[in-house]
Amino acid sequence: MYKLGFIGCGNMATAIVNGAVASGFLKGEEICVFDVDTAKADSLKENLGVNVLDSASAVAENSYAVVLAVKPQVFPVVLPQIKNSVAKNDTAIISIGAGKTLNYIISFFEDYTPVVRVMPNINAKVGASMSAVFGNDNVDDELLKFTKELCKSFGDVIELPESQFSIFGVIAGCSPAYAFMFIDSMARGAVENGMSREQALKISAQAVLGSAKMMLESDESPWALINSVCSPGGTTIEGIATLQNEKFDKAVMDAVQASFEKDKRL
Image 1 (cartoon, helix red, strand yellow):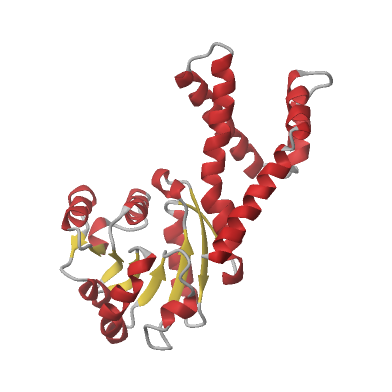
Image 2 (spheres, rainbow, N blue to C red):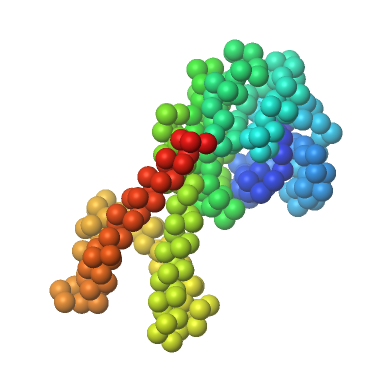
């Protein structure tokens, strides 16, 4: 019996397996995988020592928990294929499929099946994901702890009610793109003043990374931290005033709301 199985070996599954093995949470031989694209599964075997099985049902039948790491639109094809194996083995389901609710997933399985939803973000690729987890009533403390520890192997995790997954998906899932845009804008401002683009991007990215770390490790509010950087009549307060005049904070809040409204329409 494997501790964890993966159905689908795309970018997110690869990032999760990498994190689990690199952190020591799991060994490669404790993981089994299947993907219709055998090259992806074989790559994980070669690089991390996982076990490649010949079908999705084999993964479900031989794992304590199985991660549904296929695209959400193929759930209706894959889930019926593993229904009997899940029931036979009492396998737990961990879904990373965006937009697929617990009620939707459980509709393919027996009512007693434990199902956990996990929503990671793209930063899992560098071991810095922010993930949300929530399980149905069949999920016991052991499975929830296992899932949280798995998420911590490739970033950080928070337990949220499923009703907040949509807004979480915006501020955790969309925000990397917002951050990339902010970093690029700062870099372009530096390029306009004579710095090379390569240097400007590195400096801007590291500054944002350090600022995020400082906020996470501080008990102070964001504005207290802003004030700690600003000196009277200085360069920082001049830039902050310009951002406020240009309604920077409102633009960001409007972007969050627009993404949230779009998610509700999907």
